[in-house]
Length: 173
Image (tube, rainbow, N blue to C red; front, side, top):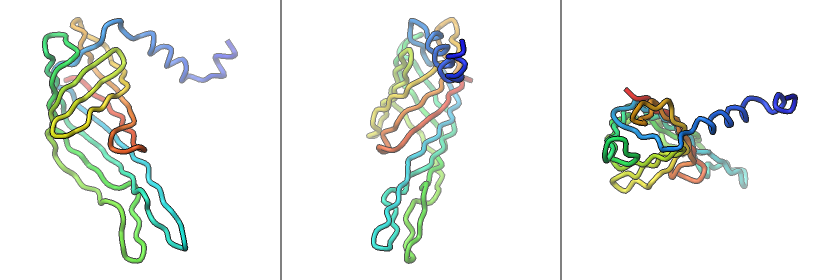
């Protein structure tokens, strides 16, 4: 028992989460509130007495709703539509010799649509309009009698860049 006490709580949470997974894949249906965060690493280079931002990074916050329409009742695939607000800007803004590098923080409303798939531990979005597919590791909340998840938490390195990570949470309404 002493060995487990020294390991901390994280491994116990992983064991509990893996034991809670259902043999069948959860599904999504209806409207969910969405809260999502993205961070992309920034980096600077100092050469010949000059500092440059080789990658300004990014911070982003998404808030709004997403509606899932399964291909059939209880299906793990279907279509989604979103109505969200995206606030995004550079993680690093630097001014050298009067030149500023880094995008300012902006806000915009977005309506996106595409296809989705769920598995026991993943959520995949395939967007329209040239958006690349994105698969997230996912943990699904309590399932109702139809296997529909009450909530989903998800995380992944994202397609926005090699040093970007996105995490989010969906809550069924």
